[in-house]
Structures are given as C-alpha cells and as structure tokens.
Amino acid sequence: MPQMSLPSPTTHGLRAWFLPRGARPPSGPQPMVGKTVLLVEDSRHASDAMRLMCQRLGARLRRAETLDQARCHLRTYRPDVVIVDLGLPDGRGEELIADLAPNPRGPLIVAMSGDDAARAGAMRAGAAAFLAKPVHSLAMVQAALCPESDYLAEEEAIRVDPMSLRDDLRVAADLLADPAVNLSYAAGFVMGLARMADDLELRGLALSVLHAPERLAELQRAVQQRLWKSQPI
Image (cartoon, rainbow, N blue to C red):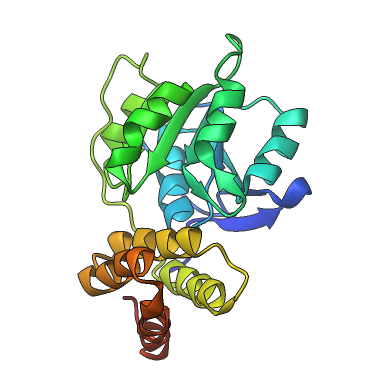
C-alpha cells in the first residue's frame, strides 16, 4: 500500500508533510484549510497519527521533536495551533505552554500526554485543551484544534504505517542503552509506545523501572525482543 505522504526535511530539524503526486486529497468539509499546526512530539508513530488527522481536517502540519526545535520554529513562524507533548527529550512540555500562553495573539495551545494525571498541570500552564494519548478520535482532535467549527467530523479509520512503531522501538532501545539518559524520560517514552501498541507487558515493565531502576536490563531485553520479532508490538 503506497504511503499517504512523505516526510520532507526543513530548517531547524523540523519536518513538513505533503500529499504525494497522484494521491487523493481528503473528501468532505475541511474546517482547518489554510491553517498550520506545529506538533511538538518525539514519537514518530504518534506524529504520523496526528499528521493524518490534521490532513483530514485540511491543516498543514509541521513537527518539532524537542523544545529547542519548537522554539527555533516559533521565532520565525506563527502557527495557528501548537500541540505540545508533555514528555520531551529536553524538558517538559508545560515549560513551552507557559511561555506561549500569556500572548493573547498567540496560537491555540493544546497539550497532549499518555498520562491523564498530567492534564491539570497542563491546563494550569495555559493549555486550552488536552488530548489523551493514544489519540484515535478525529472528532476529539477537531474539537480541540478548531472548537469554533459548526460541524462535527465523521469518524474515520486512521491507518498509521506500522513501521513507525518499529522506528520508535529503535529509538527506545538506543535511549535505554545510553548510560547518560534521563531514565524518567526513557521509561516514559517506552510507556507511551506501549500504550499506543496496547502492549500491557511492556508498559508494566517501563512503569516498574521508574520505581525499581535495577529492572532496567529487563526492560532493555523486552524492547530488543520486540525488535527481533520483526513485527509490530
């Protein structure tokens, strides 16, 4: 099955996605035509899912993988919406939300996390809405990104390239093998990945490492085993 879109590198480490030549654009009303969304997200799988949903709504998506990349982008461009994952390689997403929120002419700010307990902190920091990961509902994304819309989008099956999960697994394996890594961030990344893949065993292992770091080797083996199987987790 051909790819729906292709990544294209841009400045500051950002990526923008476009429909490839010959691909059919989404049908039906698109309430976000002409709008740009900046997604601050370190997971390729989560980014691909959000890209497809934004594409259905008519928006153009740019992605930053870190807070630093996002800030570089925001010094030059003015997106209409900024979606901020709360767990990022170089800090917490609440920091960026708090920086952006005081500007009344700034973008709509939407927080996103697999940890529902982080919702209150994100809203206190200034987010206008919160999306719980994994995000599967197009209607929920529309309600968060364009609450002024007069119609509710029909739910559609969002088919994400399964190889994006394997790419995230490779990132997870590299993170866990790095002795200098922030273990809280690495375990959180694995938990998010496991949540998207509905892998309860991997999620439980990652959670246990937060309280029992001596189980790190066990988590490393579990991630490697899923890579060796050459199939989505």
